[in-house]
Every structure is written in structure tokens, then in C-alpha cells.
Amino acid sequence: AQSVTQLGSHVSVSEGALVLLRCNYSSSVPPYLFWYVQYPNQGLQLLLKYTSAATLVKGINGFEAEFKKSETSFHLTKPSAHMSDAAEYFCAVSHGGSQGNLIFGKGTKLSVKP
Amino acid sequence: DAGVIQSPRHEVTEMGQEVTLRCKPISGHDYLFWYRQTMMRGLELLIYFNNNVPIDDSGMPEDRFSAKMPNASFSTLKIQPSEPRDSAVYFCASSTTPKDSPGQPQHFGDGTRLSIL
Image (cartoon, rainbow over all chains, first blue to last red; front, side, top):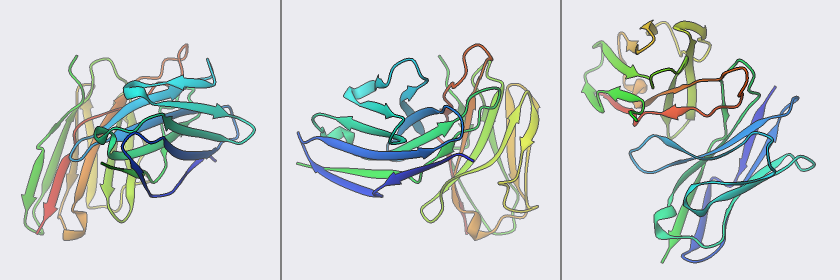
């Protein structure tokens, strides 16, 4: 069975500091991995996705994530936080194939201090 | 491109009333998902459809909840009778997962914020 664990329900950084949001997954088959962002009163928006083409994936708004099979991790990073990055971030896993179902983590709320 | 469209955006109603939430998926997408999001339980998958057929409804909380997809461009989630504990944000999402390009993401609507008084 697949699962996703996001370490830290709340992360706080200063503006300009490194953002690191952690995600570990469990999957018995090669996974497809996703990061979504949710701004207040909005739906989830895709940030980036890993589909085995490259282990380092670049997404929108300067975010990137690295797939590490040995660590079963897919952590999200951004070198320099902006105030506008304050939102909730969700990691999700799928085994692709003919099933479109995603398993979501519980989310990490990112706060950015001025 | 039009995204996933949900209506209404907000719904406030009294306990015991019937509530119907609506969703129009992205054209060409063959998967449709209904989620519920609350502070306590986070994001929960309620049911999903493939080619208008319900595939997994194990997340539907109880018989008061029902979902239909009469055609490829429309789905409803109905709660009858509604209860205060049903208050949540309900999201619809759609995706396509062609066999030659697996691992496609889901695209979410902006949600319906439901309050049951």
C-alpha cells in the first residue's frame, strides 16, 4: 500500500531564508510524486511532479524537489522564501498506470516572517 | 483553458436540508474525484469516477452522501439530510491518465465551502 508522510505540520521561516518541506513516501512500485500548494480559500494547485524522467524536478515559483529512492524522500525546497509563499503544501503519491488516484499527505503550513 | 468548475462557492443551510454540490471537470478528463477538507481530518477522498462510472466510494462517510456522474461533463455530490458535522470544504478534481503517459496530476476546483447550521 502507498502512503505519504509529511514531517512537520507547520514550518516557519524568515523572508529570504531557505524553505525545506519534508516528504517521505512508501510505495511497492516505482512511484509518481507530486507537490501541491493551497493558498487560503483556494483549491490545490500543482507545483511540480516527478515521473522518473529526472530526479531533480523544477516547479513553479522557484520551487524544486529531489527524488531520492534510497531515502524514499521527495523534499521540497526553495532557496529564498517570499512572503507570497505562505500557504499549505501537500505531498502526494500515485502508482500511475490506469488508476488516477493520489494519496495525499496531511499537509505542511508554511509561514514566512518579514 | 477552463479549469475545474465548482458551484456554489459557498453554501449555508440548516440541518436536515438537502445539499447538492456541482462539478464540471476539465474537458477530455476521464477521472473525477470528490474530496472533503476539514481542519481535523485534513483532505479525504470521498469517491472517484472513471469514464462516468464510480470506481471507489469507500470514502463516502455514510448513506446520507451520494454522488453521480450522468455524463462526462457534470457530477454532483448530494447530502441528504445534512448535519452540522458535514460542514467542510468540498473539492472536485479531474485528471486523465493515458496508458502512454502515466502519472498525470489531478486538477482541482476552488471548492465549495459548506456550512450546516
